[in-house]
Length: 445
Image (cartoon, rainbow, N blue to C red; front, side, top):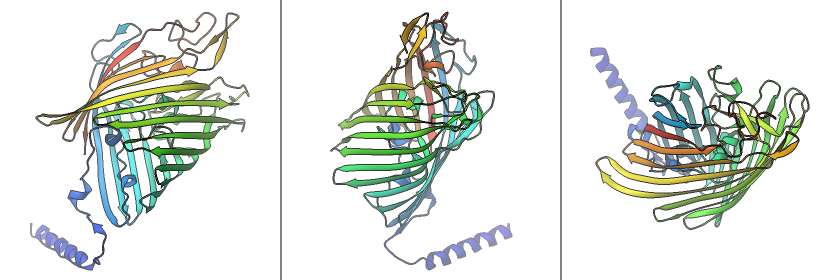
């Protein structure tokens, strides 16, 4: 006990000496427990899931450290392909430990650091979401270097729900890559120029769920047997006109699709126009985008009509080589005073994916089937507890089906949804809407 008391006195004396040694200046130094864990996550997905406080700091003459994270539980009730599932069957209709994550943000005299690492215990998967260092030159100029968000389309998200819009599932919403992102604001404009050498590094996954390269947060083209393609050398340009309560903008993206087996190089091109605005308690997000994978080949030199994408440690799935997407989302905030509950945000997000690919079946040319995704729901905020209630519905959506992935975002499902498309299993032109009630309960600290 006496040793502990002496050690405690020594710590107090050392702290006092260090405090006297710090020169007084205009920098507000707040390395206290209160500041380290002090955060405001707001009451929307844009502020809750994007805990990137270093990027939000515009003052150059300040210093702080923030540490946080989240613990989340998830449960679902699914009605897929016209059938439901008993309670507790294959991760359905049961509570699972969805995610836990750790966030570290630091800022000191313009120097920035931001880091997030995620663990998914149910899938035995973990990986980095982002990790970068940066410099705030002034309130309108910033540079980030490392694993950082790709400046494309609606930022930070095109969605309001726990789910994303369909662009996320083809790598065009909340994508992260290794490189740099330079941001400059000029009068009422915000410009981004970014270059990414490679996609983000893979994490660790349970191999029974999918290939090692799919252990990542963002959906990317990943190598699989017979098709060893990767993304590299990506450039992004984005310009947004800042409005009073929103923005309207244009984005362009291009990168190589490099085959590690043959060294052949194809390309992806993508463009988007977006608009977001707030009217009081209302928020509107809308976007139109187009992408095209040109001259992408498999290991045998065959040009591909769809590429293989993967994330979260799951198996990869087909993604049509050329498509357009149209997204719209609306939300409405209802401030309440129901005990600890302070806000309820109602929302609905919809995406239509128009594919331009074709396939020859039974002597006739058939177009790839479109993908629909609709997610109405609510986000309930109560102190540090946040809960998403989503009713996710979809047609040819790779996560909303009894048979994960497959050809849903490629050709579209066949009459027998579990088998590949063939002359005996043609594209289903009238597939059922699948529905999943998803409840995600999280504690954010």
